[in-house]
Length: 185
Image (cartoon, rainbow, N blue to C red; front, side, top):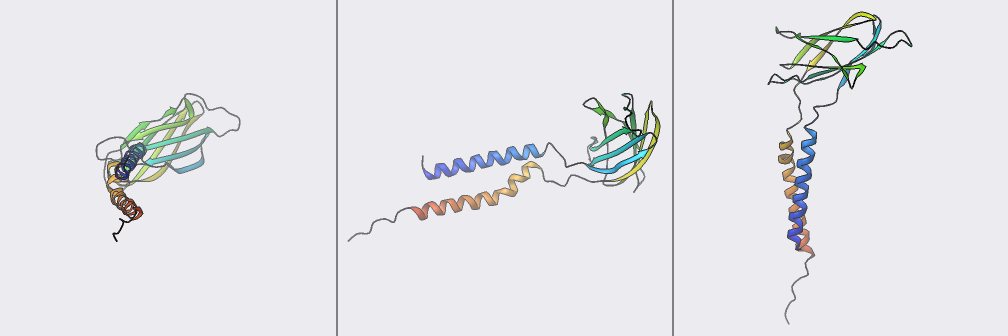
């Protein structure tokens, strides 16, 4: 195999790896973060985490995870415990969005709901928990934002100059390492 063939193969492998890495990155929009932590509300202790991504296509990008436990130590959380999350824009007029939480992997203490956040801005949340231990309500606020990471295809475009420079450097090193042609007498 010639050196130029090796360089092409290496660059091809780098391109495939970068493209594959970009596809995996698109599977996740960003890490969730807490907006309520270990707050006692009625008979429950709650935490609310969110990944508040807004969308233009009407998909439910605003994701919310509710962690709920019984406030009384040693009391198990009944399986019928659920919550309703109502979200409304605080920065403009708009319709409320609502969804019911569902247990994550069958664990009633971890519940999830996704809602449509149709614009960037401040949203108010009202979470109403209902179950055999009673009802409880708490409120929170969150800023909805668009996912700021570039599309995976853009990653290739951003890396292209570095790959070209790396290829030119390898080519220059190959030329430099060639023995000088013999000079005549």
